[in-house]
Image 1 (tube, rainbow, N blue to C red):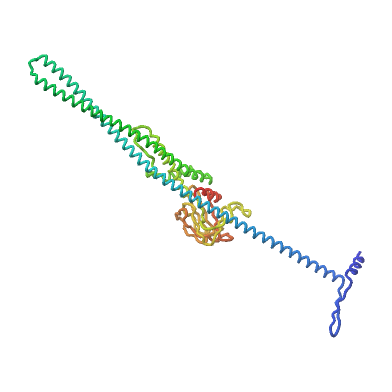
Image 2: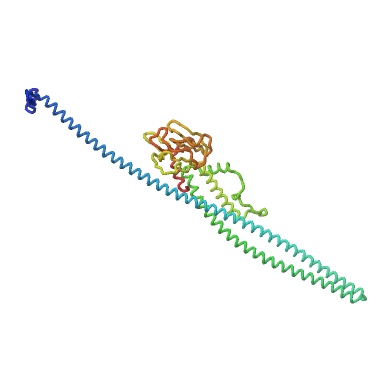
Length: 434
């Protein structure tokens, strides 16, 4: 077998000599079959390696181009999404302003209505007082008339007795007494007619007041209907924003109501004197509207204390959502923008940490009401200190690249009871208001 292989190699790669000739002598290099095989094998391996390396470079170039295209598409998608969110935010802001205007208009209408109701109550009291005075005067006059009649009858009876007993009395005295009694009767009749006329006028005035009361009730009903519709339209998105965020709105409003328990002002329930009777329907409807307006005011306070706002107002990109990332839990949302971009508090609260924290870099923690905490990480500059009271929209720092970070961005977290939740739940829920 070895002899056959040797013969095959000699036939395929025969012994060759390469002559090198100079002016003085001639030399040669002998190329044995083994040397030729090694040279051919090395050349083949080099050519194969060059082909494979070229293919790998071409595939890597094609793959890099695809990744760049994909990154460009994602960037375009994020920019379009950002533009959509900005337009929706502007629309919600306009709707919030319109709701505020409706709220102010409702307050003005309630103030006017309350003034009209008070005026109507005063007029009703004046009318009742006038009617009582007229009735008292009429009763007194009628009593005097009856008394005068009785006295006249008594005088006539006495006169008849005197005439019968004493026919010798002078006729002049009898006529004088009769004239006196006639004048008294005429005065009583005149007073009776005057009282009857006053009573008729009072009845006519009472009918006019009753008609005016009916017209006022119709006007009040229209005003109440408009107010109830406006309040219902304004409070409907507020009822849904806390449900969308997974929060118990009634519990939050009860907490705020206990903390803001002062009484007085335009939202105090209306009260009218009913002389021990039940409240009239207008008072009940007015109190119902005021209760809804009070609920709207409590919602406004709750929104200030709950992180429904967005921490970055300048142009930005969402670079990483809440959830699993690289096999680990990413407990917030990343917003990427230019270095030094202002960062704002998303709700009222108290700063409980302002400084360096491993992994987070420069970090600000804000404690809010209802067991909610927000975190703002990787800042280049912190503009608050521990213990500061901040309001929603206050600038608390600048965007940076500190801590465990691959580039300039803000890592934003929302925690309830110490457990992280998706911040976008609150931001999306607030689209209907802000």
